[in-house]
Length: 264
Image (cartoon, rainbow, N blue to C red):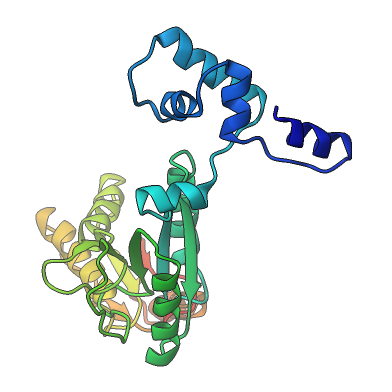
């Protein structure tokens, strides 16, 4: 520890250890200490390990701002969304944070309503933060954010949102997931499988209907009636199931592709 750090510590002031403190304790130059911690440079494994041990003892953490200036990176990812409810975005943000934490990368989340002005301001804020990459996500796979992205000079990935041609995009496999769910019901011996789903203008709802029909057709079965499209609510599913019973068209299983969340 340097004399200045020792004085501050004795005065009760917390002082983060610096690379100079690590170098002094390990009896190496600052350059050697830096290279040892970065896994670069030529040195004995004993020296490299000694530097790492001292860094751990001193709870040394690199200055991310200084490192960013040197590497021309901010070690942050931007997550831009209009999903203010958070049903889709919060799990995604949690997963990103968990995956990036060990790499020293933070996630900068910026959410806004479905308004171009608000989302454009959020995008500009991310550019000012100099994020290294951008993830765009929304509430449905057939609708993108209502802004045109200018050339950003960074990688952009779309998740659960419509993406331009040629872009990297990740969406759920709604059709095959629906087929698998219905195949499970068929495997249980069910052969009158009804389908209750969300609004027909949602691509996800239409894909799930396609998967439902495909599974029935592959098993030589016919739908007991048309798929019932309506709101993405628990109340809709409850009401529809009762209507089936009241009409005498009682299925022996229901594939429900609805949710309690709000959607737009």
